[in-house]
Length: 148
View 1 (cartoon, rainbow, N blue to C red):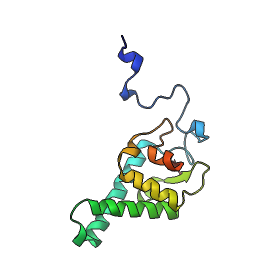
View 2: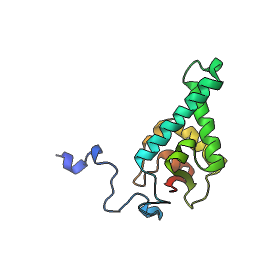
View 3: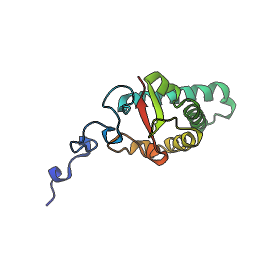
View 4: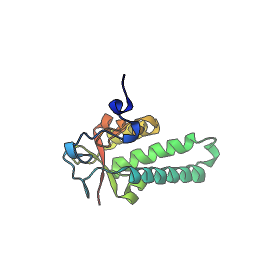
């Protein structure tokens, strides 16, 4: 019979198997600039971006704002344009994060648009690997890193 110890627990988090810090196998440092962004700053950045999107949708697009769908559209456009131009959204900027390709270059508009679309689908960002890369980042070969 299989026991809980055999299977582990979903509460244990992502398996590390003694591999070290997230991003180690990708050549990223454990801390500081270039290291993989951790969970808390990512969530705060997402909340900031959603709040900005909701404010813009309410203030400038109120006659079309029959639902949260307009906020989602503004979030998509904001995220795609900001990551495409600067490599980060306003929330990323405040939290000291940046979206980069795996070789440390800016993501570009194509990757930013696909990444933003997958974030709007909600599920891809929730499925992460041992390097804290969600399905949305893996699909476009990007990573969210600390820049300060």
